[in-house]
Image (cartoon, rainbow over all chains, first blue to last red; front, side, top):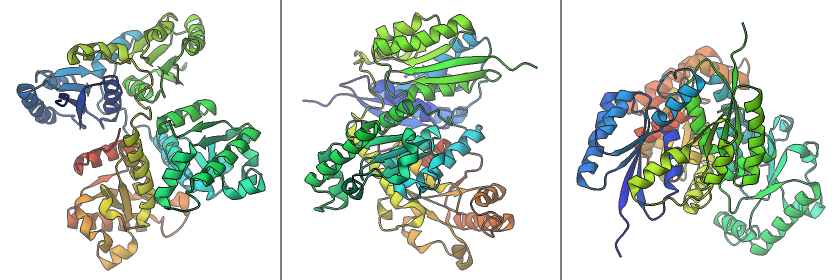
Length: 275
Length: 275
């Protein structure tokens, strides 16, 4: 059997390319059975840079399947360079800005690279402070500033708390602390006392014990810590504890970090502090 | 003078809402002089949920300026619920999927919530490993696994290395380490020896000394560490050292974390490991 044809997709932006990449990736996940080679072209903010990329695209047009070019280009003359290659070009701004201009009754500024610029200094500061907050309140290191936390994640060791907190901080500017539920808590049969005043903003992460055991085994092979039976006991005890206190939780085994983060934002009704 | 009118914009998704939020925010940055109230509605994957949101939107339509509703909804019947509200609705999938289907000669799967699902388990693992790598190689804590790093960021303390590494890990699945350039290095006049074997993947961050002094003052007010003259000396010494070794750098003062990360990806020619 031959391999499926590979279609090259270019994500072209006059800024970081992060929006068009996410956008494009989201579209491509809707097509099964085609292999895509994905190439990002950021900072294409001059005709010269556009022409360098266009030359590369034109070669592909000539030699094989014509590439798909998804763009977020504010400047029409730069867009035109890509359209002249013969590739299949869809520009995101072109399709959305015109109808929006009509609806809002105002022209858009046509400023390049705005969406992830440092123009929004307050928002940027929020995000940096949130990252520092998350690092300083990772794994229960400090409980001093928990009153300032927007959310406090709890769960057994290696249930995914740290990456989730960092994602919440970077993506939403949210101050996310995390605190482990450990065997001592389960033996004592008591939720960590330091968290008692903050029940309203606590959210749980849980994980399938078999998966937890795998993850822990990578860290400490053959340990009691990673033992499947021990993992089962810890997860059951943590879930019982959360249930008893009415703490909502999600299972990180089958969810992406974006899904976990978006669920938390919605459940705790956190308002994002920054874009 | 009266305040500008506030236009409510809803970002509606059948998944996390992260794509449509980024998309919408990117579009709105192109309009000056209008205040937008931005509301995200994630996980709108049933008609019931759609109708709850539609009721809220319909009230706004009746009472004032009609809201803008930007959506990434795969299911047409859910989209129709929003269109019936009388709001101004633009759906991203509707505008892009049809032309793409024609071009690719294949129907799309119309599967909800795919773009940030945990379906891509390998990619997810990459990102989690990258986060763990970044945390284990933050601030020069460990040099053991530097051969495995995709990039090593260097710069003076508080120049923005840690958040940039975490962003690279979470967004691109890239293994990013960071290593501080400290006064001892400048006195010795020698680049940290541990980094010598890795010059090809080192990238620098620098910062305007006045800004650095402000940031350090928040941490240790009135210290020698935060002193403006000391900050000037450290930054000048770090830049001289990087220049001497041909290490490229960006100035984090005027750039967002996304711009810094995209610049590094391009300059070091790192291939992203995950979406």
